[in-house]
Image 1: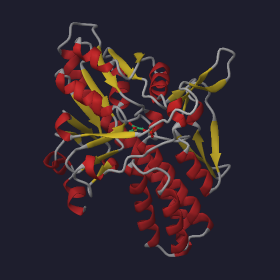
Image 2: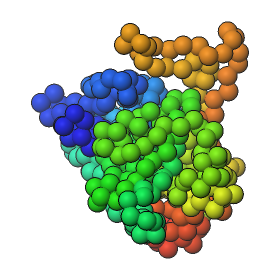
Image 3: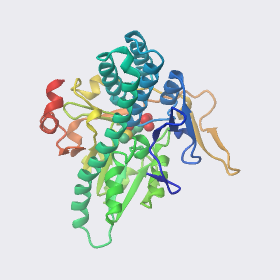
Image 4: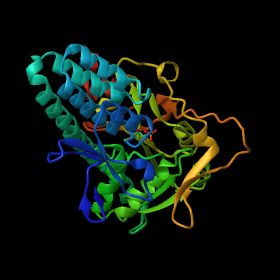
Length: 366
Ligand code: MRU
């Protein structure tokens, strides 16, 4: 997507510098900073500190991390070491392990001398595939928005609520939940997006930055406002992303998603999840019982970060000194609360049959 007129992906390989470039998202939406990633520790830090974030982007970044490892020492032992080091950076988004497994399996099947070049090629492929998948999710989600728009008086926007940032900077490009929004807007369908702030990290500010740059009408709301808006008939549909979806369609996503799904169910608002296939964990059935939920730093809850009036980015404490903070970063929405899963192959019911129907090849292998 474009930033100040220039097209960017959220990460890219710089041939001249022979190194990966990322957008350091800790400074967005206030500053657009690019960072070069040079060492395996840089890769791990970038994921842990959420310079890169969002399940698909974490996966693509990890693939470049494996390429770096293969470039310095392509032995089986070193690939295993890099796999383990990167795998423990964030526990919930399954795209991380999906990318690490895919890279390690492919590389170990090759002679050591071929591994470095193949690893870089594979990281490029994973990135390109992500862009293609998200474009297709957009096409399939667009059908849903078109249907709702067709039932509205001319010019009245389709009102979509989203949570967190499942936008282009959370993927390599397009985003998952935002892809149908971008494509609807580009087709001149009037939309308006309610953007949940998504405490504690305020990923909603990233979504607002993205939508604003693309000219999409939106309003930034507190996390607690969604239920009220739905109750008053001001939300036509919800679209969120996901960090891991189980084979029966339970959806793990940013903390607070579950509450939005409950409110949507109670108010008959359709609740869709944009789901790229690498985010399906075919080994897990019951999301609540089986998905590890990342617990992040207390400081993310007790402090907020923002732009001061004199133009500095800083943090302020919002709690009394010493107040303990609890910070589960994700929650699980059981499948019965999900209206449908918008995947690259079409929209399906959030159920084992729905997912296996669209992905018989992947469901069988698992
Ligand atoms: O903690 P984050 O910011 O990495 O969490 C991101 C989300 O929860 C997104 O909704 C999810 O990864 C999908 S991104 C296309």
